[in-house]
Length: 201
Image 1 (cartoon, rainbow, N blue to C red):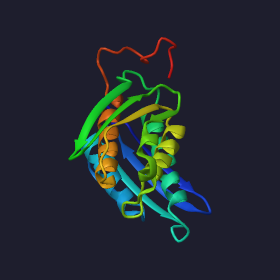
Image 2: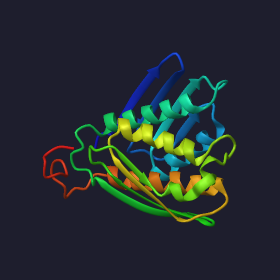
Image 3: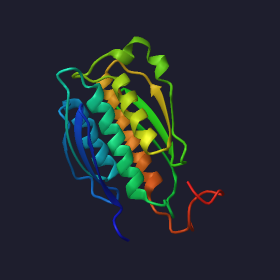
């Protein structure tokens, strides 16, 4: 099977980003966003999703990380959408529950053509703004909002065991997302055409 891959470039007055994605990869990555914690999350995302991923980004980090974080999410979403093409033969649905010590997170995705992010992060209260090396659950939410807006999928995230360590919680979220997206993007030889009664996704 031909490897499904895509390269996306985005250049604005605020950011300059290049994303190179291979869905059918080995988990090899080279990530340089200027946001160290996001580098860590995207490296483990690639590793556990078995995606080959290169990201090079420069942004107005002297102001804050918002533009760079969001634009990387947009570019990664575009890369997935482009690499999957017509989406014929994919499993479409993916689900994974991942622990990270005291944190436990469940992520379910549907490559549906309908962008939607649902989570119970509201229950995290003031912890949503707790920074881990300059990154927070709110930054992760903004990243995923940007991703699903360009790669129209449904993402449901359930924090099953709340922990005070935001590093562990964010790591569980990105790992579970990676594994769920790996499942959903895989080719199922039993699926003929697009996995939808509508005939398209």
